[in-house]
Amino acid sequence: MNLKKILHDLQKYMDKSDLVSARRLIEEHLQLLLVNKNLLNRNVREMVDILASMEETGFRPLNRQELNQIHHINSYASTFDLRGLKLSIEENPELLMREDVKHYLNADAKALLEGMSAIS
Image 1 (cartoon, one colour):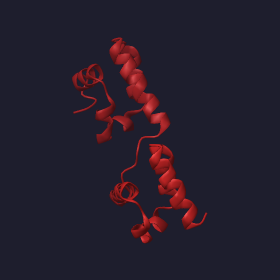
Image 2: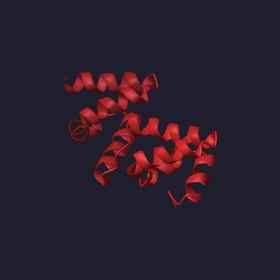
Image 3: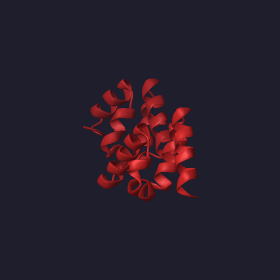
């Protein structure tokens, strides 16, 4: 894909507020966009900067499966299903060790998991 097409598509996605498609396109062509940063509009340039800094720090966003597991943990906590909650924790202990997971947990899940010493 040539640079003109990428820039046109990025601007189209940003105008439509289709941030998912814009992010995907930026991640695919991040190095090319960083080199040609002066050709980008301000909103696209900001998004490129954010994604470049995330890549630099090694931040890995949650994937669909991990988000689904968090949803199940939240559901079990909301219905106070301790058995289901314990099973979810046992199956996914590495998920709860991530710092960014706490932002996705609801208040019930945070309270129960802190009580179980699964999170701090």
